[in-house]
Length: 419
Image 1 (cartoon, rainbow, N blue to C red):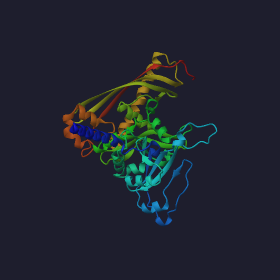
Image 2: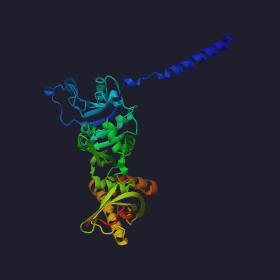
Image 3: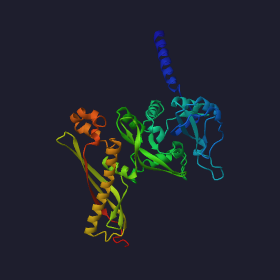
Image 4: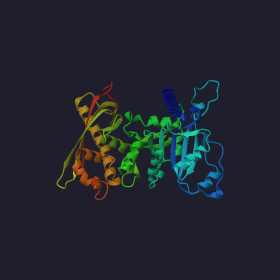
């Protein structure tokens, strides 16, 4: 009996020790410093130690910068990183008589490695930095173009156990810190605002589908060309998502940009159109706006005598007429036929402009033809994959043909426009 009781006591002791050890790393929520946005800029010039001046106080957005002693340690800093930290008191519902409190503040740190900069960040925060709720990660063009810097940053943000693979990644031709400072009226957190704008593809064909950090890392590891949403700074009260940052699989760095029209063409090629408007001409002076409601894309591959594949796209778009200027009776069969033709031609121009820039100027397969060949024609792909964007650069040589058919199913509540 004594042996059994001892065994029971030992079992209860072991079980209780396992249960008690489950919260060994517990941190109370009010002791966490929630980082919801990160902007990574490049330090172009080395900091002159003799001229380093201490910067104190805060900007209107609550931004704080390194002290002079910190600058001395980072004389050859590569990065200037802006962290957007949530202020818990600013997220509460405002009282009519209470003074409004900012919902966030910025801390800016310079350094050569992200781990060191995070440690410096912890030295300046009353709460431990916590990245599990990071919404957006913004890179400036200068960082994205420098060899190795972009891949180094992505590696760090994914290697940390707090990071999530669903964090949105964006590139800006401006300063990332400026984008993080965008705060439209009624929005408390710029990072939340940018995350919402990145998902507006159903309302604009010129917005590339958002790119998650996990997808970026996968492309970098495969040395595969890819595109990332471009965000530009319109003013203090808004930022604009319009265009694509093109990354080359040969160098794993930014090689150039597609504008909004070319991005719309890329979305048609990749079958990622969810909506948006297409402006089209009609005759000499007429013009209209077509709203995309449905799209189907079919692609066929044929091989020529030289063994190279030729890609044929057949795209059908259905939608409605949203605006019409100097267009005759929009319900007549003749006018409908002509509008369908003009819309199809306008979409084809968007697509061809994207193809020319990607094939001839950048030589980067952001269209994802390589993925298609790997799935559908794996035997050919296994022999030529090394020559697709390198060596013979087959991607820039393959013919890509596009046919577009548009159908206007609804012309609105009126049938005659002003002439």
